[in-house]
Figure 1 (cartoon, one colour):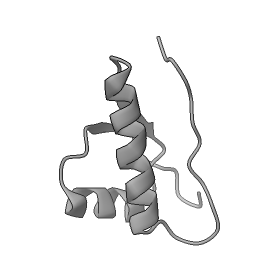
Figure 2: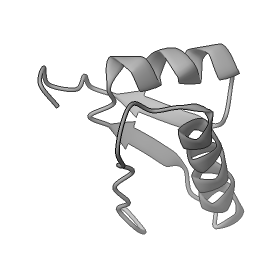
Figure 3: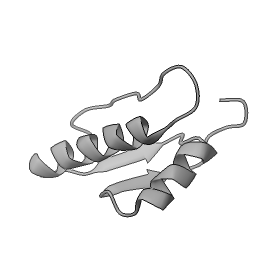
Figure 4: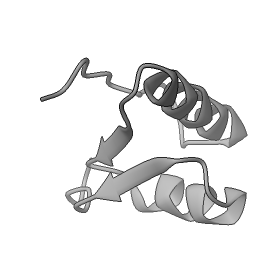
Length: 67
């Protein structure tokens, strides 16, 4: 059962700031005894997260084209 749902969006393409947001979200979830699960992740963000290494967040599913 989710504790919270958060939408990460903003102008332009994801960048290292977005990766930082994911890391902070994952850390907060871990401190509360939960986990961060990302859905509808854009391919560019998925690539950045893979480059950043393990952040404790799980990625599920694919983003739809045009999102």
